[in-house]
Length: 88
Image (cartoon, rainbow, N blue to C red; front, side, top):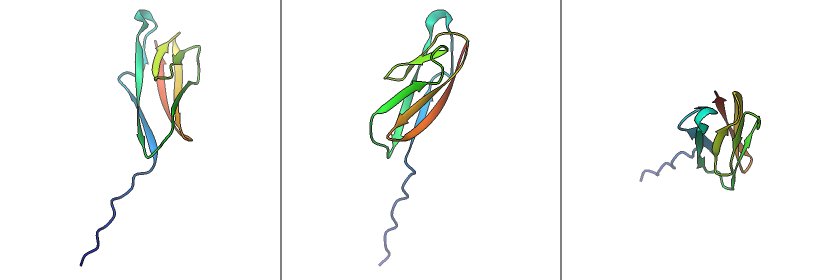
């Protein structure tokens, strides 16, 4: 009898996406980073590389403070993903 081949297991990781990677200080726009965890458990933590340019909340909402570029680092259980945001 043929043996069943196990389904391939995906590499643990996280995907970080957002509707917009450019936000504007005028009009106070924001963008929300959506995180998809693949075999990663634990709480998701968001940090901004440059809080003077962009801040991020615990829910992943990014707001622009002044013109520039910031990297939002999404971390969960030791796995991280970087998401670049441009503020105009």
